[in-house]
Length: 332
Image (cartoon, rainbow, N blue to C red; front, side):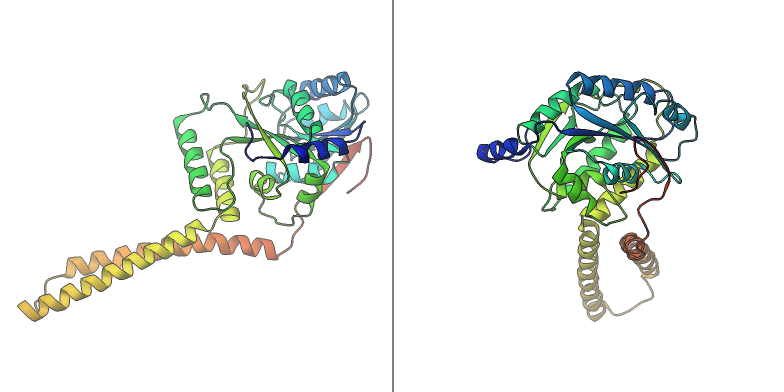
C-alpha cells in the first residue's frame, strides 16, 4: 500500500545510497510498562542480531510510576541499551521526540513498548528502507478491538483534520515505523512545542510507503491512554495542522449576519403594513441567548489557537532529561 507515487529511478538512487552496514536505532517510549518492556527489548535485540545488524536500543522512560526503570537498569549490561529518564511525564509525543533527538543510527525503528506493534515486521520494514523508501509506516488493518465511541471519534477526527487541508494525513496510521536519517534530522529541526507526530511525519515529506498490518493485544498491563488523552491529542492535531475550525466559525458568523439582515427586513415590512405592538419579547430573548452562546463558542475556538501560540512563543524546552544511562552518557 503506497500513499504517494515514487518514481522507480528515485528508489534505485536512494537504495544505492544506503550504507552497507547501517546502525539501526530502536526507539521505545515507555510509561508503566514493567510487564512488557524487558521481553520486548530482548525480542528486538534477537531480531536485529539475527539479521546481523549493528543496533542500539533507546528506551525513553516518560515518568513511569511502576518499576519499569528498575527492570531496565538491570538490562544495561546485557543489551546495547540506552535508558533516557525524563524528569516527569511529558506525554508520548515528547517521549518520541526525546528518542529521535538522541538517535545515532542511519535508520530508526519507532515501536511501542506493549507488543501491540508486531516486532516480527521490522525486517520487512527495513527491507523496504534498503530498497529506497525513507519512511515505512504501519496502517491498522482494522479497529475491531476498539469500542464504538473510540472508532467514531477516530473517524471523525481524521475527516475533520483532512477536510480542505492541502496536506492529507492518512487515516489509521500508527507510530510504528522506520525512519531514515534524513527524516530524523528533519524532525529534530522542527521547533514546535505542541507536537502531533503523525502530522509531522507527513509534513516533512520524503519517500513513504504504507504497510497494512495487524495490531495485537497488549501482552501485559493496562493502557494509560484514555479517552481524555485521545481528545487532547486530537485537539492538538487539529489546531496544529488545520485552520478549519476558524473558517467554520467565520462561515457561521456570516450566515447569522445574513439571517439577521433578512429578519430586520421582515420586521420593517411587518411594521409598515400592520403597525407596531409589544409582541416579540420571546423571539428577542432567544436571539440574544443564541448569539451569546455562539460568541462564547467562537471565542473558545479562538482561545485554543491563541493558547497554543502562547505556549510556542515562551520557547520552553520540549522536555528535561533527569538521567541517561547505558552505552553512553551524553546529550544530543
